[in-house]
Length: 432
Image (cartoon, rainbow, N blue to C red):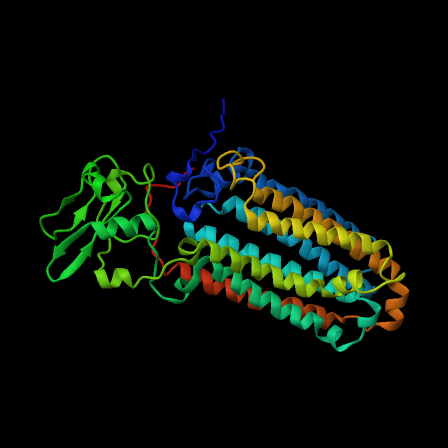
């Protein structure tokens, strides 16, 4: 009889620091999971399972709406509907990218970063899709054909490029710009300062997961030829080299233990640190800023329409959906930045109810409300807009999307390439 073996789960102290989530103590997957293990984890309760499904299921819903709209529209002859289709297409891309990022982010440290780089790019592509739809259907009457209207979409393109770069930078910091640079974790740094052996005129630094007082229990010894400490014994928790993240018990077999790079004290102290590990608060602030300011720019016509105008133009049926969308987006931002409720009760919301799951739900509801508002604006304002507004042409729409894709992908490739100049620890095997 065939049986399905689900991957083993780990505690927070068993995975490298780069995989840690604030307030989440249990349910971590193996930090070098295979693609198969990642897919199987969709059907296992981990701390990522609901993060995946809260965007994977809405992806199919938005795809159904997109295909239905295409089916009932003469797309080649109805240029008025082109901005809507661009928006609906991008609303399918970002949930898919997000669910894939949360599915495969445990394959390795580099894979984790790259998955989220692509996720950030997809979010910013959706931001541009929103701007194109707002420009075509939701911009207030008094702004139509003004200078602001003319530059609204081009500046939205620029915002997406800057935002993608800033959000990627928030994960790596200055380490992204330095070849061969890598950042040991705090535990390694502290232990390394305590484990020093002399080798000629240079200073050799040993690194260990445990503190200096625990080194003897890990079986440290010196090789007679080079005088280099290596890890022996049963606990594979020690390294003599500086690694990007501390290795952890159960991830490296004793047979795989061997000396690695030896760094001088000066070289070690000059190594840059990942911004995400060194300054997590600054990292989160930069990432929130990276997403907040494109949203603010895109929403300026809506804010003007909701709060500064009065009369029938501002009070139509679509305005109510715009108000609900704004409120839901603010709620999503709160969950994303506050890490509540898990920050108040670590370990209680590891699988169900933590802030990122609530953030996902709020984002999807906000997108649904936004889509309803845009469809209503497109329908209710069609005659007036066709008579008074200059519609976006196909070259304008395609050019904006293409520029966003090219420069955002360039940002992603640059930061991804930087990761491969940063050595990773060698683990025993992938979790299958």
